[in-house]
Image 1 (spheres, rainbow, N blue to C red):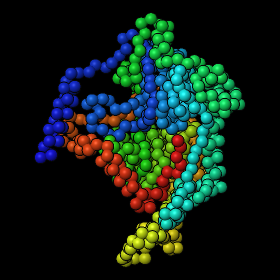
Image 2: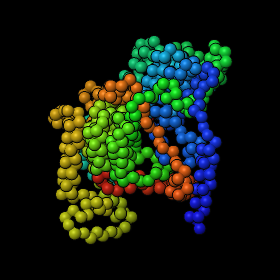
Image 3: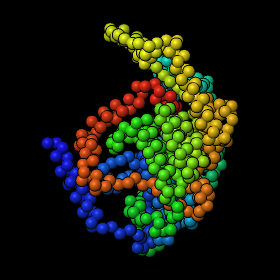
Length: 568
């Protein structure tokens, strides 16, 4: 009878939805002058995974684009007098921080003040970087704010695998494609070091230049302040890196005192005000399609616990839908992915070309758009990346794990029966033979040539030039613009500007919200699987997640365009 119970639960929740719908909602609006409070904490996602319960008890968490749109609305809203941004410990990547930072700088062009409040305990480098977009920066009195600079830590597990009696064989194109290096090397290769140093130099240059300019200091002076490890808020104030040490309520009280009758409006409340009611987000409809997470071929399902996975099955359908929708005049493809399956990447690339045959498609890159993430971007009309975006990685890698040594040590026997010279090429009880290694090399060489063809066609480059800047090398967005891999630096708004020029319009209507769950789906029981997932609890869902992620790596094909670098 469990099916009947779930349907009763579905009817119960649908009743809640229906009662909310019948109660009626009027578009929110401000009735008095307002100070808008925006919060940046934890992770701010690019898009929100499907969850059947959002909308029943609470709205989905705000996305990066939600926050950008909020600041755009606040700039146009005559009743908004200022914005306070409360920044707490967050896990945003550098490019996402630049997206929000640019939005704050754009807001300030309206002539309204933006004030940042830092409430930190530990690493605060990127949080401080974001705060420097504001007119004033204040820090909570008890904050222990550590601004130390930027660094990357790399592990090399070759010795560990050897001790575990495991053999790792990695075939890659080419020397900068370092995704497999951690599996078989014991130290960083010269090419890996060259690339890593170049990335670090580019990111450090961006960081120092931006915060020094914002605070009216030289790069040398700002670097000296960072090297002093100031830690306590008062020392940051003495060094001119912040404007004061205050609690949030005190900041709000002082801002409200400047204008009688001004009310504090929290972000969630202000999000409910339609942008269109303020003369923003009007014009031809432009769809934003999100390509977020590791790229796989088949859709693992809509479970809210699976995290960010970009399946070709789902993404191709979304791209085909907007290509065939005559009400959609252009597409912005927002990518945040380090790659994945070569086949899935090519299927998504093909779908972008079908869009391009009918309407403009512009790519906006987030933290990472490398390897397969760059493959799917290469065919767009234009590519926009943040200066700190990690992109490129035009290369291919494949790896094979051999467990013979470990199995022998454990006294575990095995037997493989096969027909065909390469039938057991995926046999993990042994290492690849020379012939199998050659076969793998032939496969990735073919894929590398195809990858270069896609980039050569999309970027209008000679393949010799593509190979020169390819070879598996990762670039920052600012470096990528210099070598022709991207067209413009910036975020969503720069992508929108390109679309507006292509459509010859002054503004566009961005269509990016995930459709809420419908009453029909609840009534027909089509969300039962999601309800089961919710009631199973986190342990069962985590096991599913681990299984799905492991499944991605059972076939070496799925490693071909795998992520190459992680940035913390």
